[in-house]
Length: 596
Image (cartoon, rainbow, N blue to C red; front, side):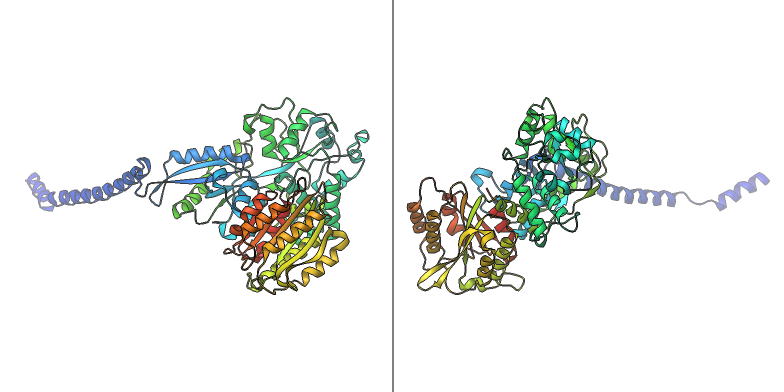
């Protein structure tokens, strides 16, 4: 009986199974639908990437990279391309070209020669912010996004083993001591080697050798009040800094090579102290690593590697910035691809690739091995780099300090130079400021000043304000003449140029670089045509008396490039630099004066 009650009780209190079954089935169907959608999305995304299903077709991201890092960036680009990236429905391919930074800068700020250089890059990896700063100073609109460092490398003093041992065994080396060390006839005394005489350091042209440029910044900062930097335009005009610049130029060995690479090769082949006229050269650590291991252009490694001496105290450090570029040649997909590639470059695996190439990378402690001559010593304190304009002014001041240039400047004083040049100042006000700075910073060399516009000198559309000669002897005359420049008439650049060319030829300085620099906002109404001007100049040429012609054109709409391009190419391989507003004149003028 009890058994029957128990069974009946269980039956009455039970729940029917079919509702649970229906709910379970529905839940499975809903979850399955969402799961199918998620899987479908993943499959579609992978198909778009892996199968290259790009609605807008392929697009190429062209990256110009300094040779020091080009191989490593190319490896990273290959890894990224293997993932078949898609940006804005474009399949992205990356092309990395090893390009010297000075060549890229000149092309971007002057006229890009596609026949010689190929198409313009969409991104730029330089060895130092010096180059991005120089571009920003003249063509800010070409900076697509703020430069971002992907690696670093300190400037070291590359020396043969015997010389390096003496420096490291002594009181050590500081970049702030460079002026005093190299200026003394007994520079080696401080390292206990009295018989070795002068401590000679090769300083190849800082306009194209970043190791020299940054070493100079450190030495000049040491002559000022704050050795940590940065070097500024005002600092360069201070007398102690100008004296330091003059001493460094005077101490430069006659045997100094054109490039850092050549200097390292000479030292490696001739390791005896003083055997080649110098015992050291400033170099980026990564470049010394590449030299010692034979990585540069697959050259054989030297039998005797050089040693990289890391300075005590403040040290300049190259920061290898990645800069996305902007311009009419960069479309939206390429702009976004540049940003995506920069992000990929900074991923852990890619940082390891950069470190393996001899660069210092945040978060990576492993160093390449073997690394002959490289100790990977820690940097005590980093030099604060100079700003955009000052980086150009350092090289410009160096170029004129060696007394090797004779420069005649022609300034446009037409009415349009009184128009807005940016930041509420006229174009001519910016030009006056740039010229005043150049005169104040000049250590030596020769400089003259002309103006051109209708009414400049009676019926003549030009006037010589200060005859070309020693800056030191006529500094105040130059400053006074610059201060009196004022807009007056119409543009007449070519008439003035022909007259100035005749004058420079008549007083040509043999053994010097004789040059004419024209500063204008463009236009030549009522003047000689460019073709007629070129013909007259060609007729004036004298064999053995070369005169270079360069132009700084103000304003993005200036006619300078079109008007002057043929003339500048035909005379001394000059350039036409276009600046978007007046604030870029100082940097552009510095670049022109620093050019070789």
